Length: 280
Ligand code: PAF
Image 1 (cartoon, rainbow, N blue to C red):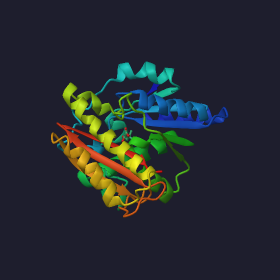
Image 2: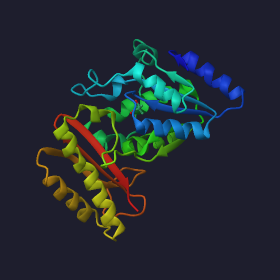
Image 3: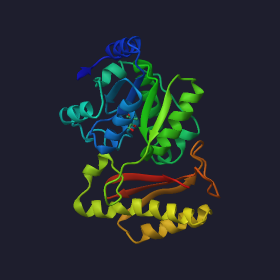
Image 4: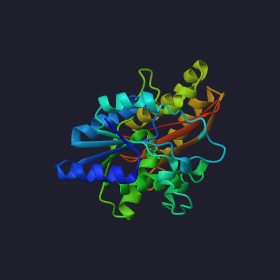
């Protein structure tokens, strides 16, 4: 499998693949690949004849006190599983390739970028929208694949694609979980054994909200206070947010409707984790 380092190489690969009659699939990642990423690669390979996986730890989506420096970089270990699960090429640019010296252009999805994770991580979604725009411009994909675990990111990117009339379809794949319910995340590798056990509170709260909604509870206040009680049983976890929002606008709702996003974020020790469900 080929490893491409420059925007020019990726664009040429994409155009050559399209000339051969293939649809182009792009799976943007920051590496430290796990089974959640593999599910995206498989979905991409199932519907696109040519699949590029990008591996790039994007500096602009990390705040000054966040984990950019220590984010797991496991490039050598990532290549073989990516190829096995359907990647035809890996795009792994240097930071200067995507952010040339003096670069001062950013993509800001106003409103949405300040909600959920954007509220606690100012500038995060500006960094995500900017790098994903750069990847779309370079790879010219027909379809781009993202995980539902980053549900707010999906909302921001859908809005960006709509607003900028980008010719790419955003495909959202279901959350992949460990057998005990923990949503897969590259940041799970930061957790100690006891933190890993505590981290299950997030999926427990999500499952509870799904069950209550399925049983007919539609009031946001009731769903949120049930989740708060679940978190109260684990005082070592600090809740960042528990919200019920419209998945398109990320605005809070008072009453859940089918498709409403129930989302949680919490600090388990020094690690911030997220989880969510689209309510029935
Ligand atoms: O979801 C991620 O891993 C990142 O936010 C993304 C989309 C690859 C952009 O850096």
